[in-house]
Image (cartoon, rainbow, N blue to C red; front, top):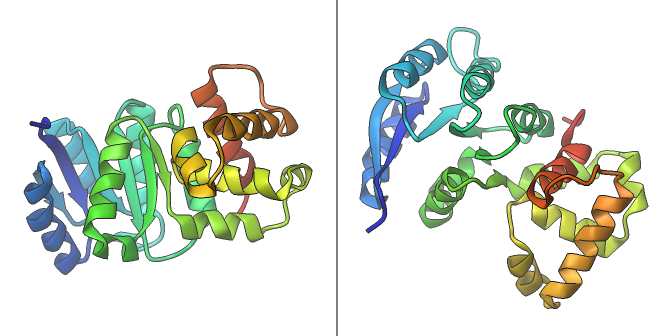
Length: 219
C-alpha cells in the first residue's frame, strides 16, 4: 500500500477547492487543510507540515501572483517541499520563477484544465512528490514559440527530446514516445546538454538546468 500523501490546498474558487478536497482522498491523499488565500496557505503549511502543496497562482487580495509568491517563499524555507501550482493561463515566466526555487525539483506547473483528467492529474502530483518536475505541455509549447537563441543550436529531434524532458519524462519514456532506442535518447540528451553549455554536474540537475535555459525570461 502506498503511503498517504498529506496535502495543503490553496484555491480561492470554492467549487474547485471543494472538488479537489473531495477527490484527492480517493487516490491516497490526505487533505490536511484547504484555504482560499496566500496568507492561509503560509499558515496552514507552518501548522501541518504537509508533503505537498497545491496552490492557485492568482488569489486574494489582488488576484495577481500571490499564490506563486507564497509557493516560492515556501520553497525558499524548505527546498524539499513538493509544490504544484495551478493556473488558468499559459505563462512560461511563471514556470520559470517556480523552477528557480530551491533545487528545481519536486515542482509542477499545470493548467487548471488538466484537473479534469483525474488520472493524469493524480499522476503528476505523485511524480512531483517523488522528486520529479512536471510542466504542462501547453507551457512547453508556448516557451518554444518564443525566439530564444540557445534553442537555435538544437536539431529538430533534440528539441523534441528537450520538450519531453521538460514535461518530466525519463529517457525510457521518451524513447517509447519517439519510437527510438533509449541509447539514442541518451545521445540526444548528451548533445542537448553540451550545446546548451551546461556545467558537468549530476545528470538530473543538468536536466533541470536544460529546462530553465529556455523557460527563463519567457512569458
